[in-house]
Image (cartoon, rainbow, N blue to C red):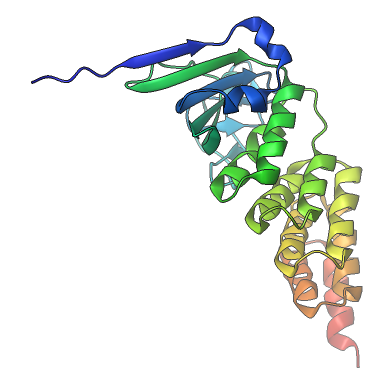
Length: 266
């Protein structure tokens, strides 16, 4: 006896855009829900496992975002497309159970199951939905909802990420992930937010240590002074040691001067 695999496609009409994305997702049948939105300038991907911040004339390489939230420089150049951001949600009983993010490429027909395509949505609406998902979801879903937020066009995300990092109601792993991506949001304001996060007495130590790491990834003129202040004055010895460790990796002369001061102090 042969079994035929059924594919059910649900196309959502354009007027439904007025309805919130969260409500639309919750109303879909169990299966996969897809949505797309504009990627910010300078971003590209291969539609699969590569997202990079550097592309020129469709050729990309260097500073690839890996899917564990880390990044690395590339040795091989590859073809790359400047968007869109594509988000695939696994939904069961009206709840998102998994999030996958891509940049570029094309959606393919699923082999089996129900697929709901929300089409192209505004980057603003997408980030609002994903931030709410990150705020309320448990486990990997909350963590994985943060990456696509950082890829959206014309949206300033660092204040929202800082809010997530400070919110004790948000699962700790999600908060740490928010801090990591906050560290990737270049700019003086984001750096000040990270430094303030380290000083916040209501934030757990491991979240503060992640903020110290994020500061170490900033340009030296922004990150090193903040790390030196933390190494000198922070009341938590473990946080001070983290700052000293990352200063040691910086190679900055100001860090060497601090080490000399600490080592020769009576």
